[in-house]
Image 1 (cartoon, rainbow, N blue to C red):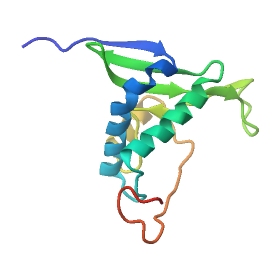
Image 2 (image 1 turned 180 degrees about the horizontal axis):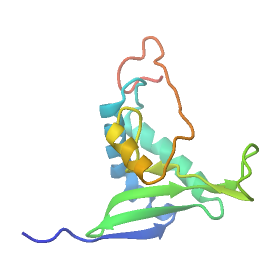
Image 3 (image 1 turned 30 degrees about the vertical axis):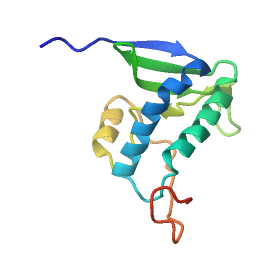
Image 4 (image 1 turned 45 degrees about the horizontal axis):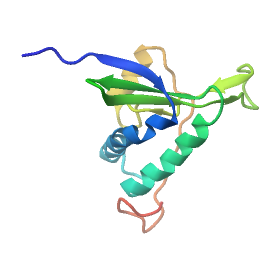
Length: 142
């Protein structure tokens, strides 16, 4: 049995976005698996909306995407927009936000929560959602 291929991480730009689509889809599937309170958009629509967001964020100076690769294929990514600091917190001149981390965690995934807490992460923002009456299936607008 051969050893698994090494993982490399490279900084990239908006030119790499189309490669990330399968990873975004995997993330959507995982979200549906562990948390189905709010129906999801259909996959193609979700990706197109997210891709436009990524393009906008990456147009700002300092913003970046890191792509993890195994045997040349994308295996994970993190997108970090960098912008002005917000009006509430004294974070310096700029603020970097982890927008998408395709190995992240959401409510219901307690093992991931514990994993991040062991590495010093603490909850900061907790988003709450509710279903819109009649929007019970995947693909309907919430």
